[in-house]
Length: 385
Image (spheres, rainbow, N blue to C red):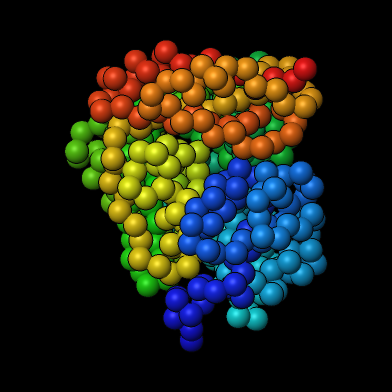
């Protein structure tokens, strides 16, 4: 078996990424520093990775033959999105291609129903739930309101999730396989990123605290360190390590929690890839989540995850009702602010609430960080003509 150095040093090594969006783009930006050659597959010919990868294939990431043909000559294949053709990855894995996260992990995580059952099987704390097939099941399984309905597959960035507050809301319920969850009156939403390499080395990043946009139903901004006790921080790290080891997963895993009113942690969802909740690490931590992802899938020593400063991340979302070539207002203002770093993803088309980029903010203290966030929030706008 080749050592990690023999595998990835040199121009013959090929790392394949299924998906060519912003996560892949930021992985490539770290890969360039290590001289790792990255090849991407994405259905959008103008995907962000198409501009900077060593090789780009325009094609479906859910089609068996397309994924098989793309992956079969790679040394390692990874993903930046869960909705990929797992059967093709299983086949190339049998041929000796390393696939991280492994196909069995993707099967568990991409179906939220299987994911919830995994928590239950391993005695991991999560909200109570029912698995339902259609709207008829929805009606018969609602005991009280409010309740949360999530599509088992296909949801992302707040899509495929809705809160049903009363009987009248049942009409808008999804008529598809879903999970029906107890609504948790949480105190805070937290997230943590954990990584694991083939050698079994595990490391976690500090816990972050998330602030959600109720209109877009996704993270508006987050900050680190989270305003939680050391006990909560340690418990989050313990649970994250337990999850990634129970999955026997290689790669990077984002774990989202509800911190309840009584101080308990409940697992909300997990994502087996770099995640929105780790974007601030590019400027705020010794090692970014994207470099850590590379280190984990290439079986390299995991990096130091310590904070170098307090950090926050604000999403740059497409303005409501935008749909067309992307334009940006306010860039010069942000670039003139100390401790503010702009990351634009290179998406040609802006749509309502589409993630077009993010802004990282650094400061010596959380109080200063929050003041700086308020001073720049909404200053950079992504819109169409």
